[in-house]
Image 1 (cartoon, helix red, strand yellow):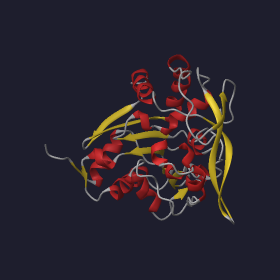
Image 2: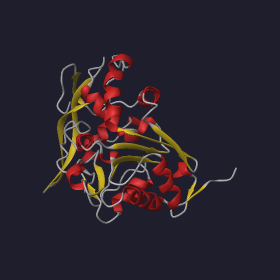
Image 3: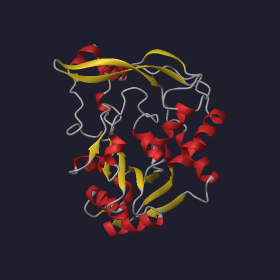
Image 4: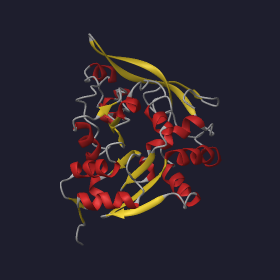
Length: 288
């Protein structure tokens, strides 16, 4: 089997087929390896996005750093019997300029982070990267609590009528769907307090902030149902070996808000480790 060769021009043509044009704001999730062989690697993908969007467009990607979560949230085997508090005291603080994007998020996002002029929001676990004319407004004021609600960068993307762009990745990786979790009171929705690291003069200190327990376990099914319901507006195109999808963020979230109460029930799910004060979240949440 011959690996597909993908060039910058190939990517730009494919993005045009997906309806990604000049001046748009796009929330991008990308897997470099799914394209085949990209000539020039991850930098080529970033440059192709810039070319497709033009000088008045904006690229946004998750810049997540789950490597900085409190060790109390780790699997017990990884702790190897060590007190998680001791490990937490020795963890580095988050730095917008230098903290790497986690390898699980992908090489394309890490490349965008390193490009001069890219801006980043300040959340130590779920920062967003933005590059383009609307970048500063998108990443400013990312609260520690309710981090994936409309209080943060995802809310600015909603206001800007952004496009969700999935390049070789499944719906299970779609960050925008989290907005709906804050809006939809589905059975088994829970909230609690989640520890986040804050840099101080004496090093990292940990504070517990109110947060929704999010879950991606049914995002793939939700995304497939969304595509069926919005077949006239969701655009799908193959770039190299990668199946790619573009859709309106607002349409996706509105669909998910209705879908979750009808299809999701997490009442039997165990409480995740590392949290405190977990309770039912039946009412209206901040950022909804």
